[in-house]
Length: 93
Image (cartoon, rainbow, N blue to C red; front, top):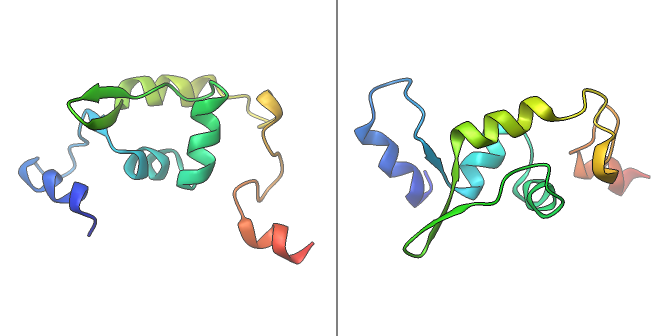
């Protein structure tokens, strides 16, 4: 378990923290951390909030941004297709 995930132990079962780390936020929306970085850079996902040295994403903002995504996945030059986050597909072609 990554060090950041230990903090979740204090939450009641099933409760999602308000502030999400990069890895947790990317997992929450179902993409890899590198795809998450591209989505933040191109504005499809929100910028993080800073708390001291930590960067955390507001779960509510992430959910709102996810709801705004184009259903076809074609906005902002994002890869589109059934395997848009599948690195192995790029290796095989």
